[in-house]
Length: 133
View (cartoon, rainbow, N blue to C red):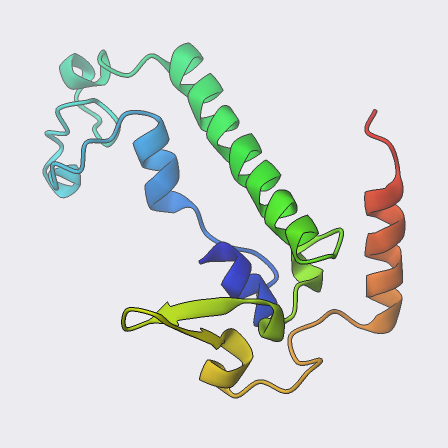
């Protein structure tokens, strides 16, 4: 979903629920009651003891790093160095059981809609070509 959103022009995606899952949320739907059994969404000191910030911060960071890695991997599979350079015609969605339709056809996008400007594309390609430090 994140790559499809970027192919349609999104500048960023929200990872709220999945980030909560990475730190131990079990979706008990008690966030608003201050009785989160895992301590993720509570101000209650007794329940908050269940949340180890040192451990959970590492898990959340690993989740975000893995999401980034997978988005970059999918972009490279589409032949571009960065997810924001993926076009809607490069993604296909499986409809019904066996019918694949391009995202461009489904949402009615023109070829270059959703892409950064030419100057931004050049800058992104330069940035992605630099070795990691």
